[in-house]
Length: 196
Ligand SMILES: [Zn+2]
Image: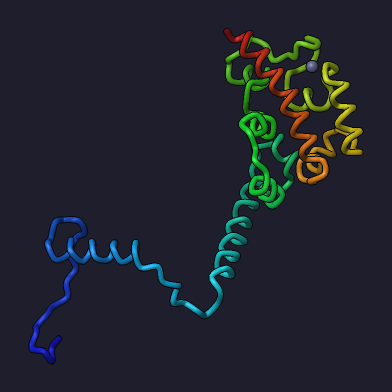
């Protein structure tokens, strides 16, 4: 530009203040970004490698926070670490009911009582039993038959120690999610009626 006899100066200006030239440059840059589909001009390593590194790093940070945190006791039975949780979440279509089961945050007596939405936390099978997700999945006598069916289908005992396998193992997962949905839906609906 100098060779052509132009003089110019560079200076900083605040964005989006209506300076005509700046607005024009901004519009052209946006237009180019939107319409020019060019391959990234960075070739020191493949883009997939960068994505992989970012994901690995993020999962490490998330996992540290998850394992050191004192919350999510129930979720940790299903997913002892973030890697197994991430594997399930990215592959499986989880419904809102599934999420209620996996977190315990939902229409269960135990949870509703905790947040003062219900006077008691018991399961309606027996006032001695607490209406928690663990009770419903592992012990509630109302679902003996379904539990037995699940054990037969998966060849796994349904107990606290096997919940992580039931949710992460692809041979067990569908049957386990079906069983969980049935059990949770019934409890949530009963509590809904009681709340009304
Ligand atoms: Zn029960």
